[in-house]
Length: 137
Image (cartoon, rainbow, N blue to C red; front, side, top):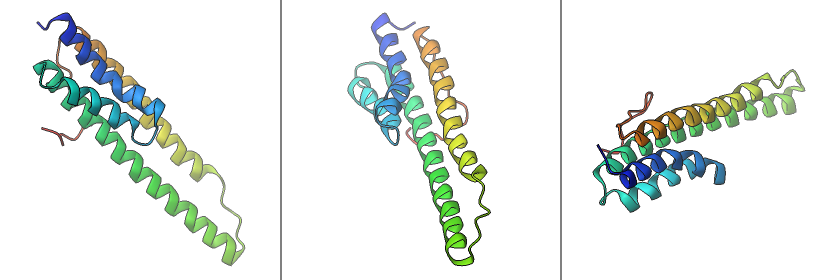
């Protein structure tokens, strides 16, 4: 069982992704977890382990958000092109809603899984994120 301070930092590293995404939506989620992990990883092995988990999950979400943004930009570009050259205005904003809804879903996943991770870490137990690429080892 980890000491209280170690569990607290383990909890904060999971919450760092949420807090960071509220401050700087595009990369703040990664920076929030990264900063806490870098500062405390050598001090506590539990924080090192949980920081890697949180960081991997935040990187996975960052990649998913970037891919969704690229697809959105391409889709909007095709619509602009067809409207300008073919005078077709049949683009309903369902496409934009789908992509912005996708970003909202990713934020919701971040919120849910990070809170679960924080609660689990606060109990002194290691949490493994689902749907996460293990990039940082």
